[in-house]
Length: 78
Image 1: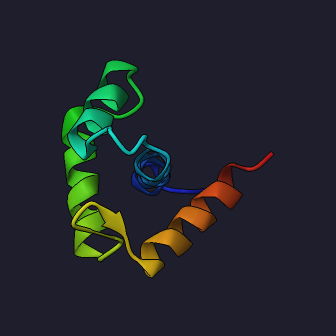
Image 2: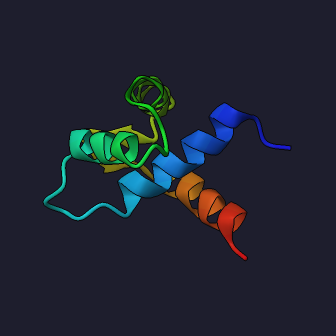
């Protein structure tokens, strides 16, 4: 079983990775909060973890980040 924070981190990674080029990270966080997927506070904490883990640098995914996105995509595959 995946812990809630790990599950939500996967959701956030996919949302950030699949965002439109004109959509800011902040807009993604707001959108997730509006649809009640992830609260703004949780999103901000998870984003800090993602940045601390060096998955996302200057708004761009690193190679490690891209591999984590691949893992998240496989996790959600049907």
